[in-house]
Length: 182
Length: 215
Image (cartoon, rainbow over all chains, first blue to last red):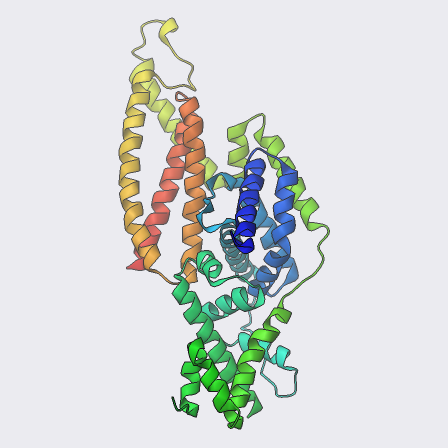
């Protein structure tokens, strides 16, 4: 058996064990799940909410829901997609709450893509200008390092759509970055 | 194959064509720059990731979960209600409970010949329970039908906006499973039956919203 496949199986088994233990109220097992995923979850939440405090709130809420719903998980697509689906849902809720709480919501324009900033900063600015679906797939695949199968499972889209949206995201980014140079 | 600048876009989408594109880029400055940029976007992307320390986050989560466990232990149902129930849900449960008890009193308690035959007001009689279970089975079948219709709409949607609805259904299904397993161990408890009804109604409303939004 290839090593990667063996490692994958081991991860799936230990994820299942951790969830089983969490279901029985073992918080140290749940802390292991937290330790394995919280960093990346904060980053994804920050990408969606653009505020660290909001991102932390969303992650906290997500872990609470994950713990409560641990009995409902199906391991066909692994633990991570399930966890991130819950996180995205919490981020959307937090975003909606924030919108309601804002007294005078000001439309925020994405920053201009200047030719004088480093390329990485320009990519960040350009990302704010592309379609949100493309941006989400780009973020999960290129920034967070998920595989297309995982992105597809998280966003509940076909794997081919994930690939297509990633291509569209990069094509849009390339166009915007080429324009800034021109 | 003779590679032209106009083929570059297609080559970026089809990895098999990339060697030809790279060959062409050796003699074409514009395509070389495009290819370089395409690679740099992916190469620099991981650097966009946000990392920061939050040593207080896990203790906060742990504290909330410990409080939840403590609340759930002596009164399992109360714990569940405290987590998932806002005042509307509580009010709905209270109203349903009131109706269930009233129906029970009107139908059976008045007819009861002797005090010994009476049951505790928190519990349903065998006959009422049968009716409740039959109604629940019929209700569940109609919701399952609705669910199949909505699942088709959800599966067809390639929009991340559909995720909250799917997620809510998942959490509701989990709650329904949990309450049903508790009901199976304590079939006569009217409160549990009432809570189950509220959850079913919540699911029904969610499914209706999905179907309406898909129209």
